[in-house]
Image (cartoon, rainbow, N blue to C red; front, side):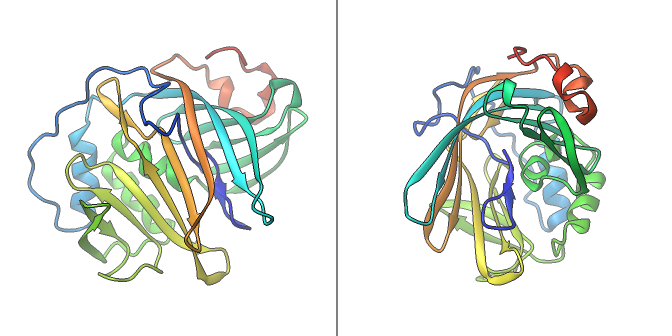
Length: 266
């Protein structure tokens, strides 16, 4: 789950297998609860939080098969390992533990890890962590403020469809597929899609989708995440060994203690 696939974008993503259920340990899917239809971004964010209040998991871990298409159309694959503590913390281990490569998202900062040490840090957060996970667990006011800070036009809101499913769209008017925006399924109030310009070139749009949702505990997880650009799938992630509410020590998200984390905790 990272974010910046097209330079300079990086992707925070999830997945398991194309069937959408393998590798996800879960109970039956939670039944959608009836509610008044959202009328704006604020009521949508509140509805997302309220729908799964007390149901959403607090941590999730998984093994991720990451595939990236190169300019010559060949595909490079790598195994990543990820730990998430909701809200706001994500650890990505790139490859084997001995390589000491990865990233940590914590306290609105991004830390790049090389050789088991923090190489550099920058201010920022992972939008997919916010929209796919944190929104269901933190106060709506906090989510709305973070969305404003991240540049979404929260006064733009409309209904649309995606693959035949009714959705709510925040950040763009009807028919606008170039503005920074996110899409939420109307039925289950699950995050489905993020559209944003790919870096400084606003004519190139990165299209990120959470797909094949499967139940996890009393909530959900997207076992397939895809990134599309120019009508072509350029990056995707598949999850296995998905586990919810595994106890995670805070050391997992401390960049100066990368090598102290329990690499076998999954």
